[in-house]
Structures are given as structure tokens and as C-alpha cells.
Image (cartoon, rainbow, N blue to C red; front, top):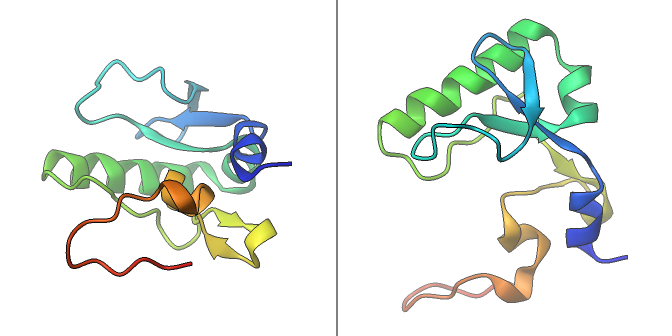
Length: 108
């Protein structure tokens, strides 16, 4: 099974800044600064205050213009198929699709 298929099957949910699960990932009305998304199993394993902390961190970073805002330490999502490597977008899942720019080093 491909890595992207595994990622889709994880049932990602949207987390509000109050720490509550708000619905499916990708349904945020604020497209410029969307809510934090986590796999449902990861979201359920965190306390409401831990979910709120990672959602607030994303909102604060997004408001400051950051494109990628990492999760808090407790909310990190690990990809177990790759030996516990932190998944960061499609580049980690589909390594051959990662954008390569001039001066960057391609990792295999």
C-alpha cells in the first residue's frame, strides 16, 4: 500500500483553538490561515489543552506569515512505516514529488 493511501486512511480532523475537534480536515473557512489538522487517533490521544496548544501555535505562526508551522512536541505525527520519521506534508510521503530548487540537495 502506498504512503499517500495510508495517509488518507488515517481520518484527519480539524482542531480549533479551543482544543475541540471541529470536523474533517480541509473544511476551515479561513483559507489563508487554516486550523490545525491531526489524524483522529492522534487528536484523541491528546488532552483538550494539548490540542488547543498546537492549534494556537499554528494560528499564531500562520498570522505571522509562516507557511509551515510545526506541531508542538506532544502533537507530532510520526510515520511508523518510515521508522518513526516525522511526516511533513507530501514531500515526506511522496519523496519523488518533492520540489527541488537550485542550490537544494535532493535526499533519497
